[in-house]
Image (cartoon, rainbow over all chains, first blue to last red; front, side, top):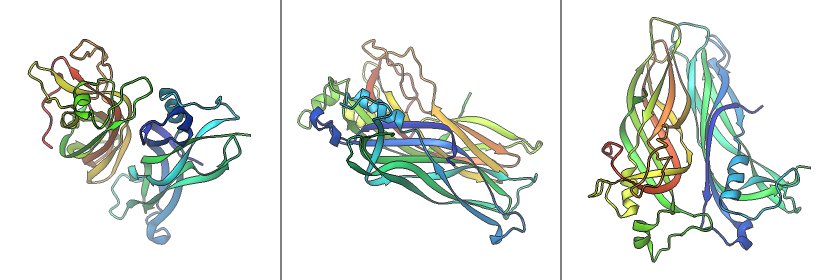
Length: 177
Length: 185
């Protein structure tokens, strides 16, 4: 289940000079997504297994519909009538630059700082999905989520994680049915 | 009143961004003339840096203490590098960045005596909706920095925050200096 995002921002801009309307389906975009999420991950306790460490991966699913719709309108990009039969998604190019970090933690259940408690983000990864666009053409790298793997030790509880994604890709339209 | 952060390291990147149809676009050949004269040009501005502060928890209670801190990066050096205008002109005008879109990011970069810390939200420092440029045109979304909501538990002290702010906007000349001198870079 995706993490609750308690604050998010986005920015989208063409990654190249704006193409002619007849070529706009090839337009590449630079999309920046930032935000803060609520999370709960506590270590395995003072005498817990795995030397106190607990590891878990969490999906973060930012709103991409808002920036894509903004871009279509602001830049006057020709597009099909938006709706269930054609909704915009972001099909990633070969490179992206995600970032995530722990933005909140504390020692759970005690009123002292346990010197053995610790936390660490291990990794982050952009998740994509394969699909077909509303015309039936394959689209192979539709942005789906950011997966963040966190570690908490002993009494440490991680309660905030934040992200900063810079993505390059194209706007494509899927058929929800 | 937000606590100011003492910035100890800053970087910036600025590049022209594509304009929507119907506005003038920069060309390489005309860049010099354009830079001094085209108020429609959109720019992509990225600001990164780290700062120090001292935000200490309350050891007398078992509760979180919350506070908003303010990060005010130097944007004028970046704007001056592409506008061909001095940061503060002879007539007292001042360069500023009027936003179209913004995507701030901030993180806690230093904690001492760690009982717990939290960064809960960020947002642009409230705009001054009545601002006008040197020609009298309204520029209601001039960037002034970001406000960041922090929390500390008991003996924790947040000693550093860092930021990565991506902005899309237009360079404007304010009729009179509104902001203080830029921080050293």
